Amino acid sequence: MGETFTAQMAAYGPGSGAWRLYVVRFGESDWPEHNWARTTPVPTPVERAEALADLGYEVAGAEWEWLEYSTVPDDPASPVRLLAAVSVRATTGGGVT
View (cartoon, rainbow, N blue to C red):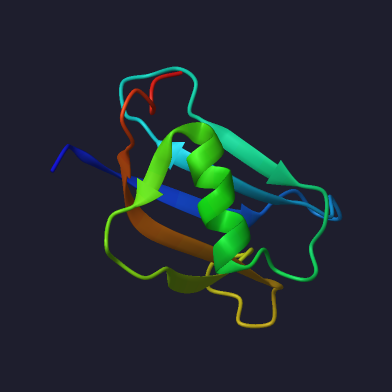
């Protein structure tokens, strides 16, 4: 089994209306990413797997984990953002941008 990385997905930018999936590659200036031009519905696991495959990655046997956080720390009335993460590995010949 090869090296694993973390893929994350979040709706980004206030009012942007988009989901962004990216693979965290520390030490690199550009991380592989895929964007969906919508906020609803949330990209399905199949759509996420297809996007990862297009980027040269696959889920490394784990399920997506979701985290919610406030846009203004320590303010429970501020809007909530969602962030999903999963372990991934490069597929043969992929994962290099």
